[in-house]
Image (tube, rainbow, N blue to C red; front, side, top):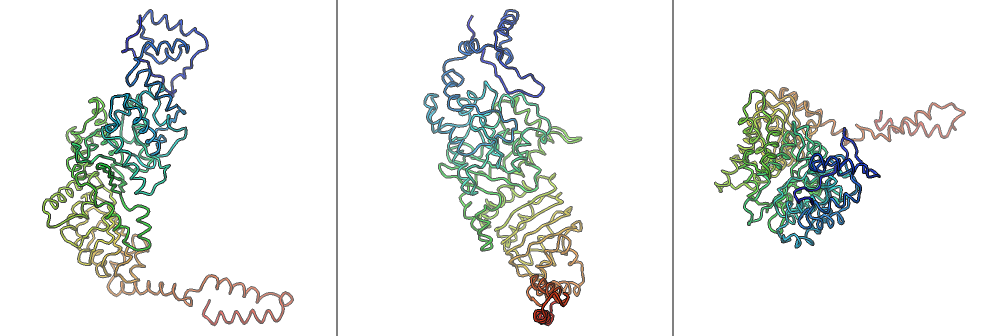
Length: 586
């Protein structure tokens, strides 16, 4: 009796630890064994990959022919075409090394555009669900491989961990990827870890998930140094401008980086054909510009990001882990159970609330510098949104360390400075603030110190380019919380004296010790630093190393035995040595 279409071909996967590496036998003995099992148990053995692997090639071919449809995603026509275009190169055991390059994503997109008319799908509507159904599954199902293993024989370390919603347009996703390469000035060989192409989806469907730190994706995030790239469609015609914030898988990927001190999240929003990239910090070109002309890089970053759609940032305000969705409810519950592990004495509802607050704060931090720089005190609706964002960021009560870049924001306005400080979490113990070129003055530093978290122990502040003096720095240091034991301050391009600038380079305790001295002792400490600076400038006070070496060489010549040096040369050596001593060299 011919087999129905429901009896699809079993999967044959790569050898797993603890399992037998089944090979096809040369003889037909295994076939007879398979027939006996089929007679006794109604073909159930044919649903096991072991039985299929033991079949002779000819029987296996017939089995495949009669057990699969001719057309459709897993039909023989499509599978043959896909496997011809995407040949298997070999298994890459390490999940974190299955990154792809933008060029390889383009290869998949080009194949889909050429063949999508056979799928009855318009090229303009292609998304990752279509790619998975018509390309990835047909190419990988039989071998239980990942799509990356059909694109390249070489392992590739991830430079960026990409998170996105599968239902969004494939072409726009690729536009965002290419724009990110351009903005960041990255090589074409940059590795992007994309779950749709890196995962063996049959394994992921049955994988056991424990704690977040032990999941396979945790290794991927670590290999990428927790650098994340979020790509979303923000076109006016889409129902939701940041759909990835509503997807459980995307939420799970974001949660992997939740406890990082320094966030490194780039956000790419694609509107029609224009892709806008919001970067965490400056790009390499902007950093180079700042070296030649301080502050220019920050200005260039603000100009580059001025058209980033505000709707994406607003969408982060409405984030809730309980409102996220997945293709299958059981998969959603499995992911939520891994993310929202209850703390001791915590109810499940409280766990969801905690994770919602933490992830919402994480997302808002990615947009906070951008929206704060665009603030308009006359726009009440915008200021109300800023207040909501500040409260949302502060809501991560469980965060104890943070690195926050607010460079270029006009914090001379008291309202904006208050909002910036209001966003700091109350339990922070380690804090690094980048406040370069924020127009802060001496009076603002006192307010800044008073608003710091009460449990803070270690503080780093970059005030380069601000209009502050020694008086403002002393006022700031004297009003820090009593818990602070280490302070580092960058004071380049400010109005502080050279002595204080030199003192700020002496380590995390030097400035605090200086602030605890009496007025006369502080003056004397700065005077000593000035003497050191002058010593560097004055060659008499600080001899050149080459001159010191010359003096040592002349002294060695002067003590040579008389028969080892001519009298004329000895007289010249003594004269040169006298000149050096007369110039004040020791």
